[in-house]
Image 1 (tube, helix red, strand yellow):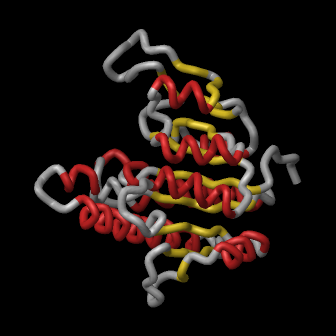
Image 2 (image 1 turned 180 degrees about the horizontal axis):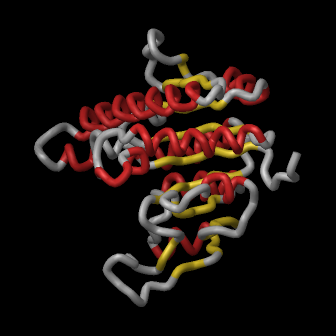
Length: 239
């Protein structure tokens, strides 16, 4: 077995990363490709927990700007993450990866309730755990979920997959061709500069618990596997 840099990782996937080129909904070939990479990571002895966003189906904050109560819109977004989690579970099981979905909002017919010790036990048994429904509370993003769950399960790192961008920049590279990409940043620099790595609550949680974040581009083939194996890809946020 190859020597691995990490023993346990939290993979943070945006909802958009499951949509493929169509930009919305769930693109099954894209989900299958992600599942194949997760299988390769698991086969190398790395524990994998996954947190999936829901922006390909519903964006709670956008919904709240159209006259909907913010908390109600956020709950709808949590349900979207459950749909994405079930799609990913199906793809993983199609390639013989034992998988459990744990939901922060109880829905026992389709997912286990999130229980920290049970999640850790699943990981120890070689199962992939998909953590759905965010934290179960409105006003908290799935970025914060990734940071919170990483601390709870004692993950070594958060692998933050971004669609269309290969790291953290000082400005939007899609709008500014001279935007500078950072190879490494401290948590404080991210907070002070207001960089779009993850929201400030999530960044602060990672800083307090000394959990590094690696931001990388999910669009390139096998990048999930490469970053999990310790290749120098994207931007590292650490102490």
